[in-house]
Image 1 (cartoon, rainbow, N blue to C red):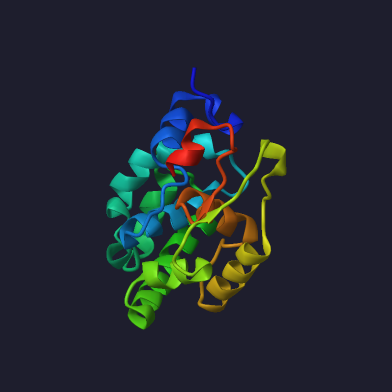
Image 2 (image 1 turned 135 degrees about the horizontal axis):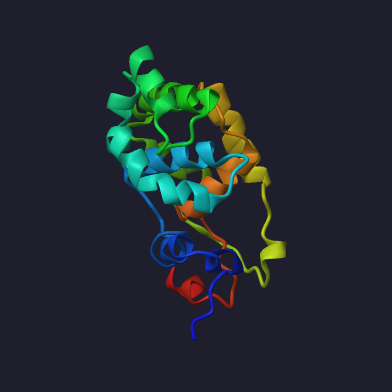
Length: 186
């Protein structure tokens, strides 16, 4: 029997996400934007809630194309706030649009969001060596720095905890516990 990170055993969504995506280094701008938005909407909720709504988010957010999301108008915001398939929080919906605009400015400045965000770890994933989930931090000095810089660039709903979760999800840090079968794979 394969051992997994403890958090991933509660649902099939979490298990599949853990086994195939979590901690795998991501360099694609559109996927990085998707995770940035999803980590933001997750604030105060469980990740399993977000995972269950992820496919619908992809549909209504035009597959997380930041160029399209940045152009959402008041009518689209109202549509999103009525859509039971997503998390209908006005602040989070508005943040997703302002974040798309900020994202595009970063792309303009750095050539890609990938170049900018991976610069925080010098382009190379950080491999941690946690034995238990209790050892895994919610924030680090690096996630503090990232959150501060993103906020300075106009991003919303982007505190240090969200940044660290983003870093874990996109493989900037490998936080699989050392007994997890994915630890060595990623």
